[in-house]
Image (tube, rainbow, N blue to C red):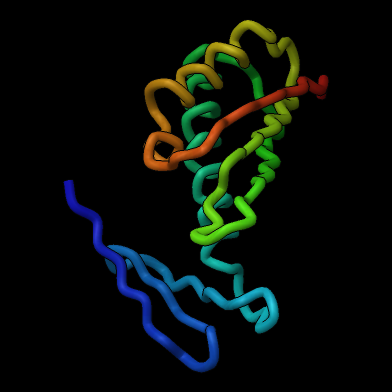
Length: 134
């Protein structure tokens, strides 16, 4: 399967990106501020990838999830190419009767089998999670 993307320059360091005919995303430098930086989008994309996996597994396990989020932080190297060396995901699962073992298994499956974004990056990944009733 091949995916395609197009990135078009607008002005300064602002670009508009579109993948496979999908909706447009504005990218900019942190100084420009009109969109997320490409490196921030990389973090968001990786968090989104694992979020889809974890929610899918939890639903298959018939857990009643009422709210869910993934908080992600990345540490970048000081020297160029300033890649992410470490990325940490915090999974927050809200619901009733959420079993820690099921959450752990869902995260492990995402990290080891399903998340193509994680598999594509050369970084150390860590995670934590918390379960909130409700």
